[in-house]
Length: 518
Image (cartoon, rainbow, N blue to C red; front, top):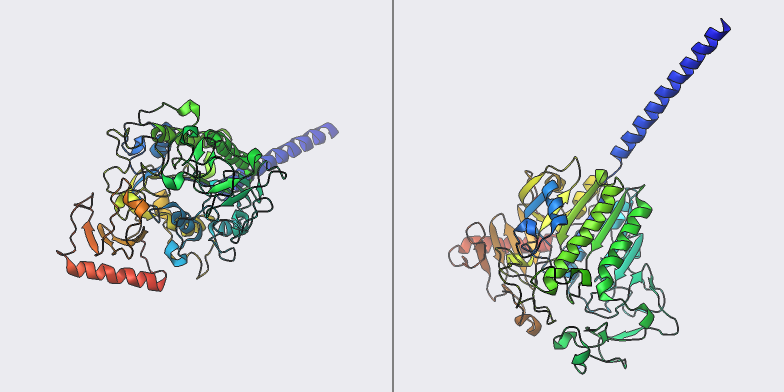
């Protein structure tokens, strides 16, 4: 009898333990599934609508990005907020149009243009317990206007909500040519302090205009100051020899830092904002990518960028993180071939069309300036397909807030609309109205596009670029449904529509936020 009772008790306890353990595992699985999705934003530099094989390119192959496109949503009418990098990055991180802060292309010694006191995308996600990191090209300014590169460099990304940052401080073609990790220059020797100037030559280093024989690529006058790693840059730099980057190492260094961030934070929801240096000038791909295309350094840099994307995606997959990670892939503006360095991008382009069927490119008010490739993927939540929804990166702020369950304040991200449904469903509607920035402003209303008159003359350095700028002294009107290349200005034919769109643009400027998103 005692044995029976003991056996029965054992069976009972075993059954209870099995049920409890099963329930615990079920709860753990449910908790994992219910965890806010990780977010990875790949933000390529100067990648055009037609620069990916998944978007029709035949002169270059991008298999890693194509795989993402085949699993997720490929957008055909997605736009960077602006036709240049600094304004687009500002808008993505603040949910506000850059013209409201007069944000423009910044010199390498510019102060931080995002006020640390305002709400930002990383700050917002931290309210939902996200860990936030940025790795890559910054170009949003640092410090308060007189940076001591030899001390703590701040304010910067950490002051606007990022928990970790590893940066190219400005751009690859500008000094200082060093990495900045959090507040400190990496590998800086205190006995060889850095100094930079954009006003005068403060260094005894060779400069491009006087030493062309030292250059890997010849450059225009703007890009012909201090030579670092065989590339002449914008601006002058002295000191900091031990901290200098090697351009060819960008893919390994930046990708490695991004993977390190994911590895360290994979057990809690994280945001990784990964703004590439590629395919911005100077295009100096790693030797293992050289010759991968017949388009020279620009084409090879696209292949390099695809490899970097694949490395991070493969790491997410190998660690089981793709199960709950929203991946957003896009570009900060349209393409440019000749952007200051003689890398034969124009001569070797062949039949490749960097902007696809669209006119213009980087700097341009025409569609090629802001219409960029964009792909989203969240396993088991995105419906695979092609979306024709009108989208802008400025809406990522409000959309990701909705994803994370964060309610925005009235004055927060005033130009950003919640289009989360469109990020996850190719059949969902996007915007019905959208503002685009270049050296003027444009307004899209479905297929109609109004380009406001340019207030200033075309800058001299822009006049020689290989794109139609779309800048004119009178307003322009195009019907993109019939005129993809914006060749037929309908302003005189439809004066009432022109006037109405001009009026609506001014209302948007004055009101701060009154866009329509379905």
